[in-house]
Length: 163
Image (cartoon, rainbow, N blue to C red; front, side, top):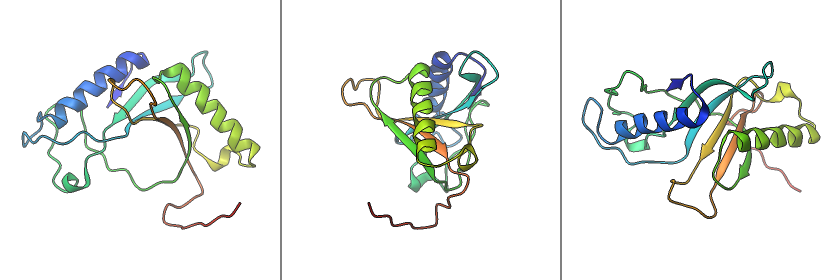
């Protein structure tokens, strides 16, 4: 779901559209269990004064048992998409997330990756993901993440490292 609005309003609008879809507003009137994470794709905009362009795509994960028979959405603004497996560099943070926190933790993740010898060619900078794992009723010990998609790691590869 792509919206050209401020992030808070875009998030609320997108969430409720997706929530109606899993609540039965779909071609089969099928109710689908809510899953986590709820992911928001954000396009950073280094050219402007704001952190990001006003384009946001929110995604709900459809449980594995419904992925082959996921019903078509009834709303034209909701779409089914298939994500290919990917590897991501991740930073975890707590609290209620907002765009200021996303920007802060995005910058910290980039700084950490560069300190560890990675360059901007090693991860995508055109789109980042903010992922939330908790409902709005949870106040303590919230789990949020920033994902930067690796450009050179294959999710099929198995790596073992020692410290």
